[in-house]
Structures are given as structure tokens and as C-alpha cells.
Image 1 (cartoon, rainbow, N blue to C red):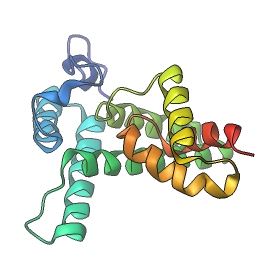
Image 2: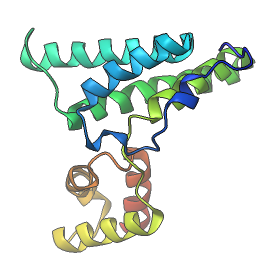
Image 3: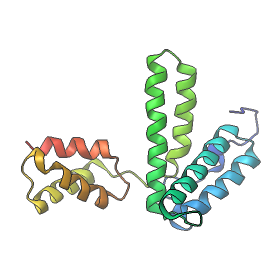
Length: 173
């Protein structure tokens, strides 16, 4: 990342905190962020946003054909997938002693996290898990699939599958 004094970085130019996209669709926000990154000459952010735009377009083509476009819910799922890829890379790079590459991946994760909705608080998560388990009458681990499916739909991208799964596992025997 360019650290020239006086030059704004992508992080400086993003004045939003996790909920910026209530006013425009995610795809439009990505285009705006690409322009911002170009103006700021922030190559890391620009490359990440370009890659994200490409991944979203690829997913749309896969799902709807050449003229299709994803809604925000599906686009957020693509963002989560991109973050997961990078988290896996960080683990691999750190295991191989390549901290420089791991740091690059972490910087990319920070850019991608801007597109996720605000995370659910621990209390909200526990409350949601308990209400879904009670509603479905789940009692054992064999009911976990149904609970997870319902939870993921209700969490609306505000909690990742790993966190949801851990909470459900604590409550089902």
C-alpha cells in the first residue's frame, strides 16, 4: 500500500462503518469504491474490489445467465466466500512461515469486510439460536441440519456459519 504522506488511502476515504449500503445496492457501491480506490491510487483495495466485482458477476452468470444480476443477499454470500478463501490462505501462509503473504491477505480481508452487514452481537446470536431450537423442537445433533438452515436464513449474513454451528453444537447433545 502506498504510504505517501498526505495521500488518502482507501480506508481513509471510506467514511462508512459496516452499514453503508442501505442507500444503494452492493453492486453500485462496489463501482463507487473502485472509483475511490483509483483516485486514491490504493492498489490493494482496487485489486480486491475488482476481484470482488468479477466474482459477483461470475456468480450471477452461473445463477441467472449472461444478463443476470445478484441481489444484495447473494452478493454478500460471494463476499463471505472471498473472505473465507483469504482466511484459508492466511492459515496456509502462516503455517509455511510466509508472514508477508499472510499480511497481504489480511489487508484484503479488511477491504472485503466493509461489504458485510454489521455482525450480530453475542446476545443476539444466543437468543436467535435458542429461539430457533425451541421453535423446531430440536433436541439432538441429528436435528442440527434443519436448525442451521433456518438459522442461516434468519441471520441474513450477520453471522458466519462457523459461529452459528458452534452455538448450535453447545445446545444440542
